[in-house]
Length: 114
Image (cartoon, rainbow, N blue to C red; front, side):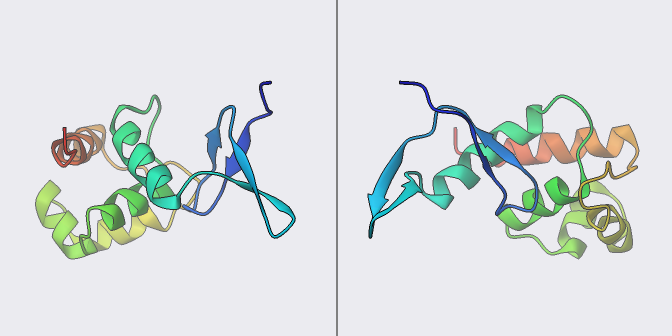
């Protein structure tokens, strides 16, 4: 039986989990997937996302790679204040130049384990 999608919101932006599995814990139905698995999957998919990145997605990518705003800025050739500004956009598109976003996506993709 196919279940309705679950919207996971703990990453700062909504992640839709299609056909989720659940388990019972202390009499309550809970999503049966680890937050680490969700983060790993989201990190592997964000570089190929259609459409522009949001501030929350940039913050997630940076945090997942364990980079400071300063370190990420150095990696993609911008000042850390630009990274802070983009991340401050939360659910909105960052407004970063397309070439910089392409570089961020390429750098993120290069950090994938496969």
